[in-house]
Picture 1 (cartoon, one colour):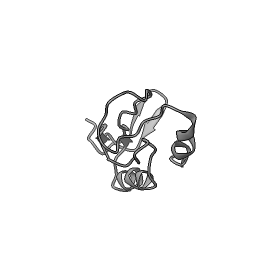
Picture 2 (cartoon, rainbow, N blue to C red; picture 1 turned 60 degrees about the vertical axis):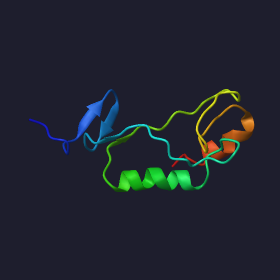
Picture 3 (tube, one colour; picture 1 turned 30 degrees about the horizontal axis):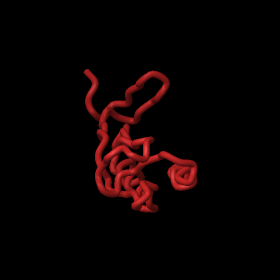
Length: 88
């Protein structure tokens, strides 16, 4: 029987274990909804802590979409550079 700590596969994705961090609100965006430099660190710490899969939080794509304070959003091209910084 497999345990939480055994490697697993979802489609073409190989995970080192079955631990999943579900989507959460990290409050790591500026007033325009652009990710702050703090966000990559949040994901790195989850990975270093042993999480096998991180599901990122919602990212509204319309400017008039209500959300939480400091919630990421992607509704214009000006936000693209900040999101690109999340690539590792």
